[in-house]
Length: 115
Image (cartoon, rainbow, N blue to C red; front, side):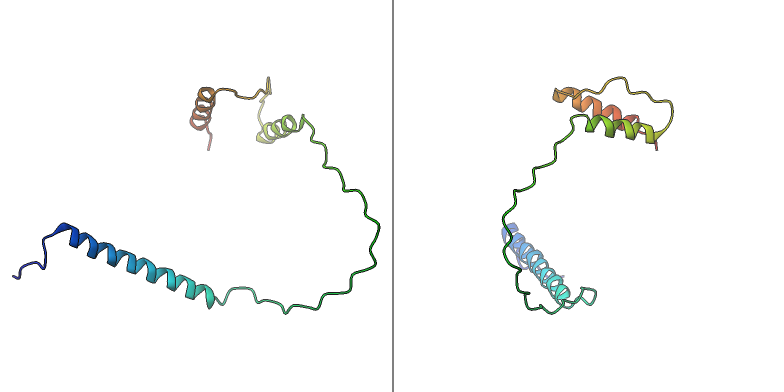
């Protein structure tokens, strides 16, 4: 049996880290190469010459953002309960305010999940 080249842990660590990062760099180059020669990538269409723009029309007012119905969340929750089926009845919908109640509610929801 032969003697080890070194017993210094720092040198062993440097050698191991060099090998690991060399392999990772090699893998990244292989991935980039595969992306370059990927046969499943959709082919690019040749760029067409831009068409002449029509005469400038008078500037119209920007459309206003649609108004959000405050009852939209309630309607979505009611639809989800109705889609689930059964004799469920929505008694109250209220936001959860404290972080403690949120975590307890989430834990109960996970425990009561029916698969």
